[in-house]
Length: 355
Image 1 (cartoon, rainbow, N blue to C red):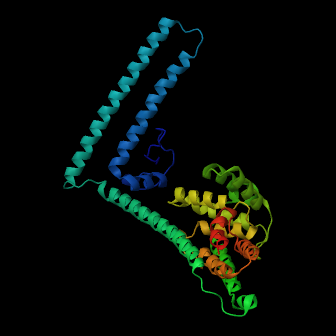
Image 2: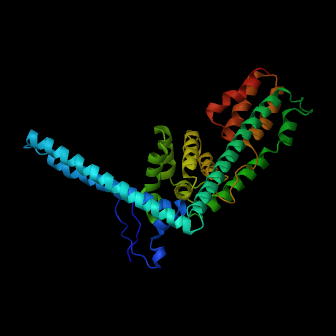
Image 3: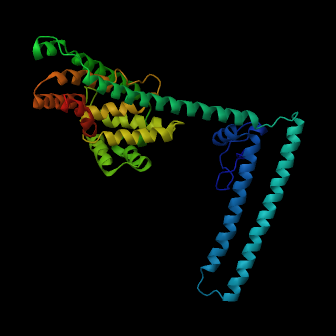
């Protein structure tokens, strides 16, 4: 039998379904029913049908009004006929809506006063509450990252003098190479996790459909779009993960975003990451792609150790160097190694300029 659902354009759904009479809705319209409830969906579908009728009336008369040979008196008469038809349709809709409300009231009374929509409304409210809490949790985590940065920068001023041995001793005690190895390994693990997200054939890299949708739906700037397309179309083998790894990861990330209930938030994060990617190397671009789903996709958490903390650990000993140019030169080398964006570097250099 044909699905009893009505689409938003007021047309009855044409999908054929098999089932009992009370379940004569296709999968899409059953999903809608489970979101709003059996009562509200009837109100909504009645409104959709009414909207279509009104649109049909206006379209019918628009064709007449567009004719060049319409007499002014005939034009005025047709306007009156059109407005009367719209009023009649409005009255019909209100009467049918009143009848539906009476039916819903009778059904509620027969159900001991329980509104059949209540469980669906409560479930929807619970989903929204969880989504709000998740958004607040993500905001708190990001805010904590900035607090760590500020604390780390303040610590530079109070860093004790390094132990004897000069720069050779500092190099010997520097374990940053260990952090770098850990971060690279984490990126590799995350990439393997992301690549498990299935990508339909029409979204494979050679179709350019993924990149096109991202540019339009996320509102990328011209510079961010150019950077993304350059990496997306390039056949780079990053971290020995295979040629074209950037494009394959972006395809999977976009499929997750499209299907996620947090799609709007994730698109904003993707836009931010793409903007921050401008001017970064291939490794930095890939790492930021993985970071988009951090906290959303199970098993992905890119916070091996806050880059702000790592940066502070590297910059702190430089405050003890007497030569200004040496401090600046070594600081810039650290920025390049840790892939710190140009816009963020000035704030980190301020304490070193006064050291």
